[in-house]
Image (cartoon, rainbow, N blue to C red; front, side, top):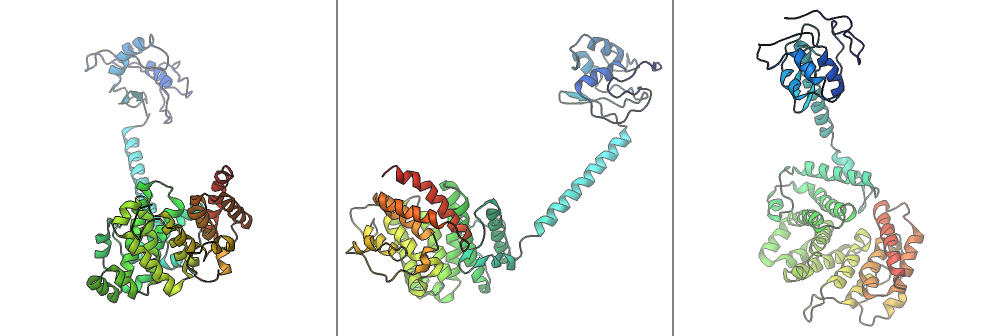
Length: 424
């Protein structure tokens, strides 16, 4: 039996009588308590253990702002709708009334579904607006990727990689860290330059932006290595020579400077986590052959990068008692003396190979000096020399020509300086 709603029954939160349909609002638990107390009905004997009014009286003895246990049982589906309250619903332990009629709730569901569809459409539209291939290629100036050393630069590089993968038709599920999977993918030979730049981009992503954890870095370097090797093997002559006479013979006939360089750069970085294992796997012989071939074809490629790589290569090998591929300081210094202006150190090395005069342009690319500091001077404990070179790097600053790697070199110099000064 339903009684009329006294005019004195007014919501303390909305200021409206329950005799009128209130505007839909989200109510707190304390508001719920007030709302329940105003239910003007009594549904004893209709499947409820107690009436709505009894629930109200029971709740009055509970703490304010919280539904009593008996009230919770009753108001689950109390059909008091004629006073404009709508139906109470229960979600977990939060009980509330949305104040909406069934028709209004259906309309809201339709609106939410429409908004979800629109949001999905917008997301797909944004995803489809990937960086165009020409724009990605345009960010390469000579051998350098012209992006800043920042989160924005990282995002740009990831877009570049996505553009290259799309241009090459790389499936989303291709395991690029698996050499056989990359080699099996059919790629248009006309896109060899894109393949080379993808290998370079993976190297740069790992080297510049992904930290120092092996689990993160190694798979990315392996991707770069495999795309570099893919580029080499896209040349039928190289592929045939490798098949008949082995890898080093194939390198000897390749003229693909970029493909070779980035294959070796990624390969050496992937191998750095276990140098001894790399030695016994034959990595040093193959990567040395690649870098010597690059020097033969274009020694200045990526700011004399193969000299830089071989300098670090010979200082980073394990100290074995015998064998060709073990730590060799003189060979390391021989290659570094081509990219740093250190006449006293270089002339003191009587067993060092002479690779000719130092090109003055090497000084603008700060990574040359920082490789020398990190992989030779600090490794040998030459702290005075390391201090002097690091200060020269900091004095020169980033400049404008090489925004990414000069910024990285400045950061390294700032990190190394206190370590070096502690040794002085």
